[in-house]
Length: 137
Image (cartoon, rainbow, N blue to C red; front, side, top):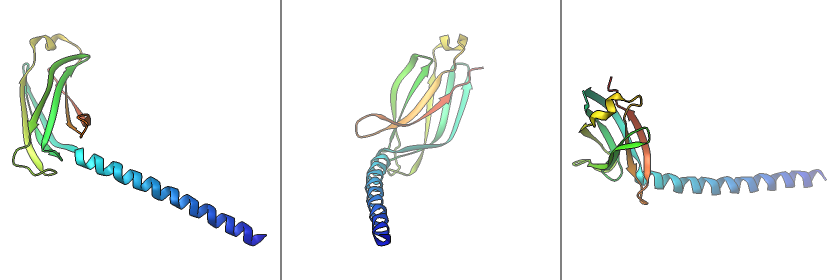
């Protein structure tokens, strides 16, 4: 009887180990997909003068391209624009800047404009969004 219990416990442990391997393989393929479309940002700085702003920073993108939109509350102030990270190999850090003038109407509102920086995956969907408020005050 004791040997049957030990054998049953070993079979149970072995079965659990196989499920973990299957989960690990699924996670690895998900990570590979994410790595192929990943984008990261660092050293972000925003300078504002009136309704004009200059955003500078560095980005690392697997595709060599980043995107941004500018929203305020539910309103889209500027639609999607792309920035090519010229001269950088995919995955390397490259400097970029965004220099835009916001509509004058944004100054009198309570919500600050928000720049959303992001990358895109193979399905043209937003990945790794970063939200940066523009302080107009």
